[in-house]
Amino acid sequence: MGGVALAGGAAWWYLRTTGEQHAPGAAAGDAGLFVNPLLVPGASGPLGVIDVKGPLAMSARAAQFPILKGKPGRLLAYQVEQGGKSFVNPIFRVQSGAQFSARLENALDEPTIVHWHGLKVDARNDAHPQFQVAAGAAYEYRFPVANRAGTYWYHPHPHRLTAKQAYLGLASFFIVEDHEERALQKALDLGFGASDIPLVIQDKNLDSYGALSYAPDDEQKVNGYVGGDLLVNLTPRPRFEAATRIYRFRILNGSNARIYRLAFAKGGEPLECHVIATDGGLLESAVKVREAFLSPGERVEVLLDLRSARVGDTVWLKSLAFDPMHLEMEMPMEHGAPAGHAGMAGMGAPGLADGAAIDLLRIDVARKLAYDRPVPAVLSRLAPAQPGTGEVRKFALERTEDRWRINGRTFETDEAPVTVHRGAAEVWELRNAARSMPHPMHLHGFNFRVLERRGSPAQQEPLALNAQGLAATDLGWKDTVLLWPGETVRIALDFSHSWSGDQTFLFHCHNLEHEDEGMMINFKVQG
Ligand SMILES: [Cu+2]
Image (cartoon, rainbow, N blue to C red; front, side, top):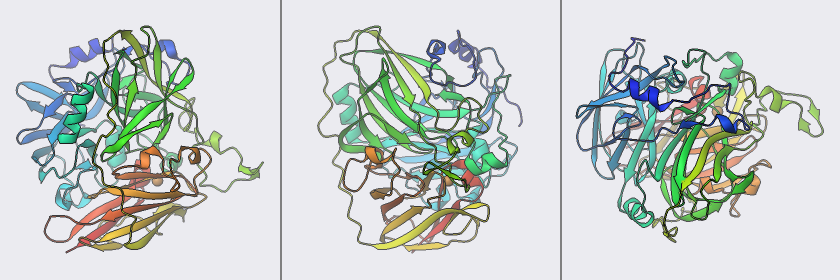
């Protein structure tokens, strides 16, 4: 990489991690080590907020970022210089209906392209690998923000380099606002970065210099690359000081392959929270849950009610232990279950296996606040999902001949195995093989509704809220849906759009190693 240390902010980043201690992993039980102030969005610097009002100039480049105190950590980042301020992986905040335009300069030493994850854009703006930008070249994005309010995000999508570049740091949020969103902010007195906090959860492997290393072996390419160092907003073992009020957390799983079983807990007891939004924005009303699975690429927004907490209380955001279901290899059956699969799942991440219990964020209730805002009864006038009367198209997810495949296929840049008609309403039935792995399936260009989830494993089934088997994270508008081994999920899609000409988009697994290894197909929207 062409080494470019970012001017200005470095000293502040060192300050941020004062008191930081490094220990391998963040396995549950290291409570005393959570002393690093959580990085929250500010007016500049890493995850600084840019209220987008005009054309942007951004670059993808190598940057210095000491994730660990005193270590010259390096990563890849998006950088924007604007109004005398320097932004690293800036959070773009945009009003629904506004025009978005950005010039991407590729200052990496390999191709890249930005994918606006969840946004309804045409193919040219969507980061199909055919548009990827050579090292040293630039690309112009220009599109109207057609989405409703929601927590979207952006990350690289170059051919077979997505996993590496996203892992090395290229990712941030794209927040869309509209009148329903503003009403919620007003009702709950939310302030972005103060009481309305985006959290990107990523698992990395840091070397002794505090640098990220991405070197999956063949087995990690099959399973996905999981790391032993958990970061929330690039902060290891983070701590957040809260008041006695309602907080909104917009949680993004920005990991390459690790799934989280998210839960809040106080004194070892699970706490209820309210799910208010999923990938594509607000639900009609809040849904109380005690846990939720979040797979790579998915977002879930929750309200955590600390009104009745006491000063001195500590609440944890955790990932509870679960079965990672790495069943892709035939193994001897013992006691009716495949023997030892939970053990093999941890290879490559000593001490922090996929599915292990993890402490993610320590929330210390530090001050009393007079706050009496209730959770609004109605969040959004969200239309119910249509039952899905269109053509049913079937997609089989399985591993054959040593590759993860969609309907037997792996990715070919210039082939489109699926053609749909512009304006068509369709139902897609996604079926994950019994001997498989979890696959978070992501659709570009359009959002969808989840109609039903069948054949769920024992750890997913109790989360179902209705007869269709849907969990809270299946509600509302989605762009990524998790399929456990043995599950069949039906989604409803509407291929209406306002662009001219044929459009080719991607449908792929968001386990980024699976994606780069070819678990991806083109679909063409004709007309
Ligand atoms: Cu996959």
